Amino acid sequence: MSTTKPAPSARETELLELAYAYSLTHGLADLSLRPLAAAIGSSPRVLLFLFGSKDGLIRALLARARSDELDLLERITDRYDEPPGLDVIARELWTWLAAEERRPLMKLWVEAYGRSLVAPDGPWTDFARSTVDDWLELLRTAQTGSGTTQTQQARRTAVLAVLRGALLDLLATGDVKRTTAAVNEYLAH
Image 1 (tube, one colour):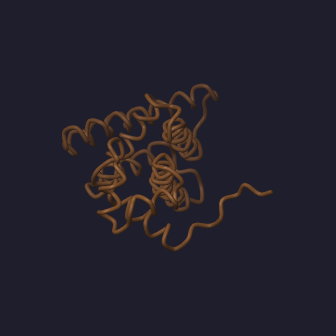
Image 2 (tube, one colour; image 1 turned 120 degrees about the vertical axis):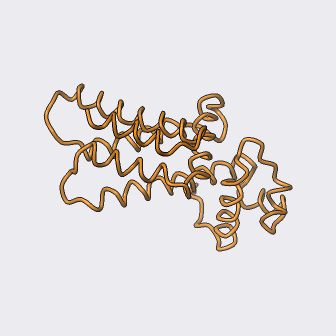
Image 3 (cartoon, one colour; image 1 turned 135 degrees about the horizontal axis):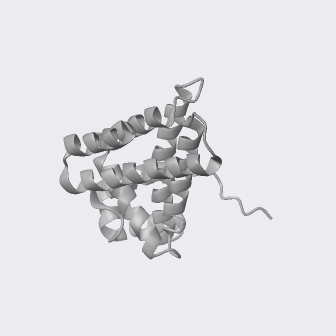
């Protein structure tokens, strides 16, 4: 007996996209099915039928957000025949992260990241760990130069920490100029 979930129906895909757009504006922490369903032209029953539970819907929304992140990583790596270097990729990532049109996605990412740290057994399970692993892998494939494996890993971790810290600061203050200058200053050394 197969436990593989069948491909989503057109209606499930449509409702997921609508719910994703809703969650970018309203977040996921206090998600209530009734207002969500009303906003996207559905009903709580349909959402529960399609996603199994509220947690199932949240997992689907987190997977949808993560797919945006993974698409970015793929687009960046596809542009280069050779590894471009950690600083080049980090600057590209920062430009993408800091773009005004991505603020809703970045706020959702921060919310999901934080929730996966404080509620690790819920629908947020492993979100933070997975996103760290994804970004570190991208940085690893971009890294050039010599040094021990441990030194290179430490540099990738530091770059990721600077990007995440600057992102949090940007989301809190809206100060693109200052946070971009900080990222560029760090990457210059």
